[in-house]
Amino acid sequence: MTTIASAAPKATSTGPPGGGDTPRKGAGRGNAVGQARWIPYAFLIPGLAFLGVFFLWPAWTAIQLAFYRYDVVTPPVYVGLDNFSTAFSSSDFWQALTNSVLFLVMYLPLVVFLPLLLAVLVNSKIRAVSSFRLLYYLPVVTPMVAIAIAWSYVFHPRGGLNWALLELGVIDEPIQFLLDPTWSLPAVVAVEAWHGLGYFMVIYLAGLQAIPQDLYSAASLDGAGWWRQLTSITMPLIRPYLAVCLVLGGVFSMQAFASIYVLTGGGPQGASSTLGFYIWTEAFQRFNFGYASAVGLILWALLLTFAAVSHRLSRGEAE
Amino acid sequence: MNPRSWAMPVRYAAMAIVALLFVGPFLILITTAFKPAGQAVFSFPPALVPWPPAIDHLVEAWHAIPFGRYLLNSLIYVAATIPLYITISALTAYPLARYVFRGRQLCFYLILSILFLSPEVMLIPRFLVVSELGLTDTFLGVILPSGLSASGVFLLRQAFAAIPAELPDSARVDGANEFRIFWNVMLPQVRPTLAVLGIFGFVSVWNNFVWPMVVLKDSDKYPIALGLAYLDSTLGADARTVAAGAVIALAPVVIFFLVMQRHFIEGMQGSMKG
Image 1 (tube, chains in turn orange, purple):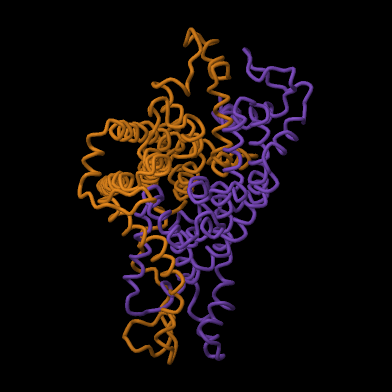
Image 2 (cartoon, rainbow over the protein chains, first blue to last red; image 1 turned 120 degrees about the vertical axis):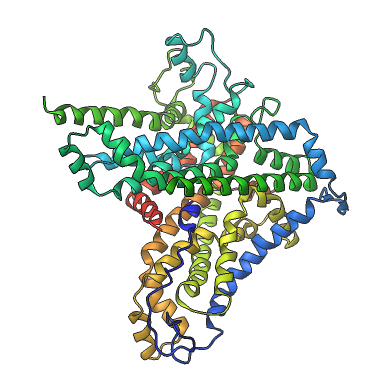
């Protein structure tokens, strides 16, 4: 949830100084007089055990498995780089990869800019404003399966969206949003973005509330209108939060699953299948565990690249 | 004209229109669930008010799949996962925040590495590890992998680090051992952070979908989200009953959210300050 946001390691935040005559100089902190050296390690045992069993061991397995053919039933067979070459010559893989990139391209602007507008809208002390914040946040806490079911009624050929578009004269006949290869992926993206808007709004709210109010009073004394205040005060000061939303948006866009599963099942003909969904299909529907692991490693590499690039960009912007 | 005189109504109007966009899909679920058999689910223009409202479909959905069982399962998953997750996060965060020891940096970076082991990449190998441990199709197999998360450790590490040194020191003078100090002195100090982790943990366990789907074969162990997806895949054509099922599935978490509302937004903003 708040992973990336709280991840930034703060080199100097390890507690107040003091704590008596510890063996090493400047290493006071919580270490007590004559405290046994093994104590911190004892605290860490359960956490490190979980880290080993549910993170490091699987990560190592994933790397190995990518070089094997494995269907869970028969023993794994070493195939070298075959899984990777299969992936790069598979049109399904390229389709899923393209869809993941398209997903990201459509999803990011929605969850990076719209929530900022929402946050500006509800960043005020007027009556009942907190109720509106709650309503905007509501989708974040509700199960995606239920949300996807609700939206499948909106997207229905005789549902509310088609009715509105027909009434407005935008279209002449109803669109089968979830069965149309052009529209199925955008439909999933819209639902995922709608689901996350409130989450990103709260991030921006934290940012807006960190801006000193006297900046705005000084600006309006100088005759700056709300637009000027938005572009000259709010936007520059909100930039670090924008960077956080950018990174989180990238992470979330790769995690879409329940929405695809319920709305389109990845279809039609893979038109809304992203890499994450493709990996699941290959592993748990077709039992190509080795191949799916190789695709997982490719996705992993892409995610790390995205994280590195957006980190770089946000650093560059800050300077 | 004073700009303030129109700014307020405009702001309220804008907030209300946006609110409708957020609440709309929920209203569609509720109205669909209560529409009587004689009223079309889909029509141009859409019929917004179910008339006369019927509760048959709620009853039908409740019996179509073992909803009571699934709700109970979800409660079991929440009740087992949250204490485990909080205990492990606290035990891990505490020494990282309050002790100096060889390997502290290494431990910190190891925990940090979790952030880069994203769930969609870990899905398959984790499933294989869990089957190696003989935990597929068990409650433990669903619960255990959620025992450790980087965000929990980082939030608690910050909270522990902010406690003044006098507190544990005076307890030490009184002769308390380090585990007593952790349990009786330090842990109560970070209660607000524990509450935040618990609240967000509840939501994420309740809504968890892909991992239980991969681990579980026996539908008797399904959490509510999986049960609902199952209902949708078997009775998809019967929109009223599926919508009723969705209403049943999201009611508990929506009520929890409304009861705990203050903690959600404050808790999330608090975690952003890190």
